[in-house]
Image 1 (cartoon, rainbow, N blue to C red):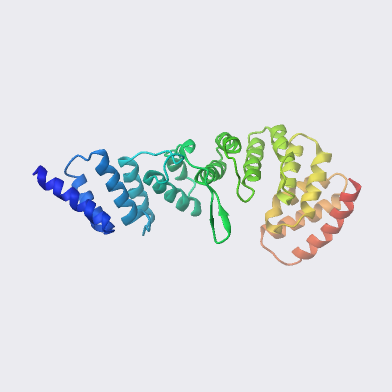
Image 2 (spheres, rainbow, N blue to C red; image 1 turned 135 degrees about the vertical axis):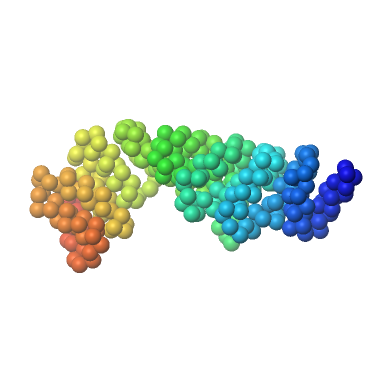
Amino acid sequence: MQNNYKKEFQNAKNAYKSRDYKKAYEIYTRLYLEVPFDNSNKYSYAWAIYQARIKDYTSKEELLSDADRVCELTRQNNLNHTKLCVYTMSVIKVLKLLYYEKDYENLPYWLDKLKPELLDQTRHTRDDRIYPSNMEQYYIYASVTYFKLKEYEKCIEVSREALGKLNRFTDGSAEFFQWRIAKSYRQLGDCEQSLKFLKILQLNEWYVYHEMAEAYYCLDDYESSLKCAVKAARLDGPMDMKYNLYRLLEELLQKDYPDIAEKHEMLCELILYEDDGGKKELEQELLAFWKRLDNQL
């Protein structure tokens, strides 16, 4: 009986060498239910799973199940000492899919399967574009996920860790780690820390000034809040995404410019009810006001 199993294991290995990954997978799967696997056979089975099913997976459920099996069979290797790790490759495949689908609820389970210190920092280039290293990509997934799940302390932790450990950043990722740290601090009520990170950001974007305006408002510094809010309003950005900014401006302008504050309220109503009638014209009218006020502040 034992000789038959040895022969079957050899058949599986031969099939894998011949790139008949499906056959190798089928043999290993059947054997896994019948006999104990040593480490060598576990790794061979894991690679068969990856090549036959994970690499070009056909369904999300299949991918998750197969990746779980790979994690059961193997362990994470240090990519700074080895080029390939079937464990890491399988988990990253899952992370990429879940992140693409914005399935943030299920991402932490898979993030916890990786130790970021064992990931490499080698970036790669394809079609003249530079892509993040495995370590950088891990931290991007983690930072965004914990922010979306409103786990702000965890978001701050992993984002700070990324800024401390990564030696290169792709497509401005450093600024976005700082951005999520700043937003997380404000959500936790620490607006002073939030402003600290916002002020070092090298992003001249409307949403950065909006976040600063919210932080100053939180600290009862209404003058600084208004300055930042007006700058945010003047910078380009999708009108519908500026709803909360316009609400803040309505509040800040209520005392000294009640008529203008009312127009901000009208604009918010048009955005809220997706009414295009006069929306663009009203924003243009307010743009002239923001320009004048910005020069006065």
